[in-house]
Image 1 (cartoon, rainbow, N blue to C red):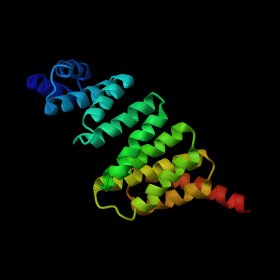
Image 2 (image 1 turned 120 degrees about the vertical axis):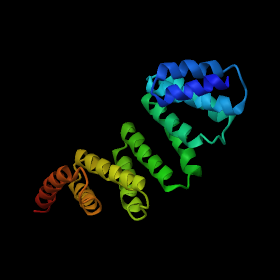
Image 3 (image 1 turned 90 degrees about the vertical axis):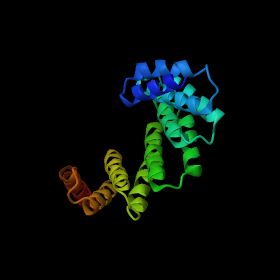
Image 4 (image 1 turned 30 degrees about the horizontal axis):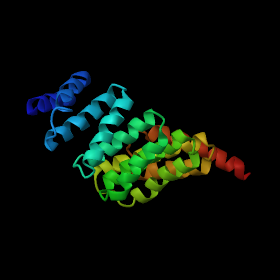
Length: 211
């Protein structure tokens, strides 16, 4: 079984999803050895997610979390569960998975990823105000405590999502605020030109509304 687990992991690393599912499938159901079965269930879920078998991904990851709720793969499994349930449009289950992350996560990068995904869930649910609040919250609070390059990327992602969503909602003041934040934090960022254009358009709208 250990050999099949190693092969499955190698296939997963090489993005050979079908082969990974087949290899991990030889482990699942044929062993109760935790070290092997944990890897196999997570690997099955991850590979099936990439194959767009989202129901299969949820089944494997749910089994992992039921068997070992304190698994070292907890956060990776919960994020994958949230995304798979989003793909199935089971947004209640997606929120539940993320709430488990919020309950235990302390690392800023993990919390930020959860906030970004929560905003996407709210947007998919049609709660645009809530989604904008999630992105703006990370924009404001995350920008004050950035210590790693990954955190900088996460805050940039939140700001750009806030700009797009506020534009869609016709909230130019919010667009302007987020554009200014992006230009302040990322003056040489890859989206500077696009953000400047959106800032100009939002500024015209704010001035027109005030006239």
